Image 1 (spheres, rainbow, N blue to C red):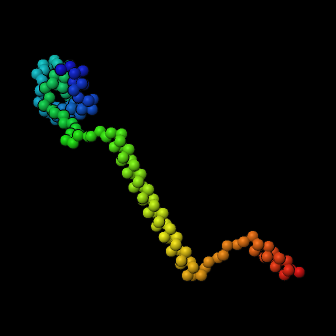
Image 2: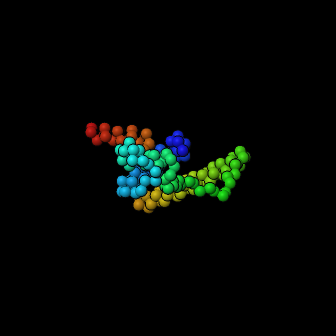
Length: 145
């Protein structure tokens, strides 16, 4: 196989991993899988990486690549019609409205309880009226005089 055909079969990362692993094996005195003359070995300068490249290009390496692939699902996805999508959205909106109503009811209950507690403790302050301020100012003036 040519290098171009191998690049179509493997990614550049897989090629790098294969060459690195084989080069390491050759550096640890693994037998060379190609029949090479002494001249060819000297030409490659006994470089394990170059020898591994030659073996890889001649497709004699007993190295396999396992790629993790996604598992195929036996379930087929059903495409929903626009009506079904609308129905689901409406149901979802109804659920959200109910949840909001429940939260509002709880909030009202909590406010009512707090008001009752305040009334029982007697700490209610009355709302001020605009006329009350006039009365206070008249009292201050009369006290100063």
